Length: 72
Image 1 (cartoon, one colour):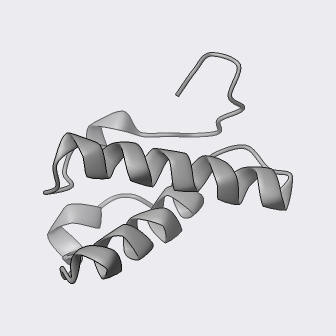
Image 2: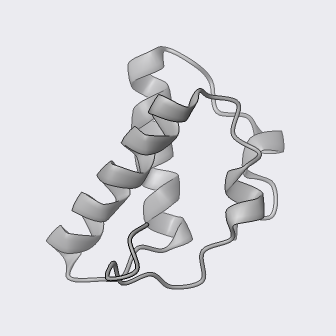
């Protein structure tokens, strides 16, 4: 995220467990930023999770427990 983007408790190592391409990770980050702005919150792991679920639904792919282990 750009330095001006408010974030809270992001764990980039855990985000690296996702099994998607870089473009999909970009979509997840962008969607999480939109969700954060709409809720007037900082981007956090809960919003990243919501954005990840949406991206995986678009891909018709199942998000596994292994990918999100330790996120919360």
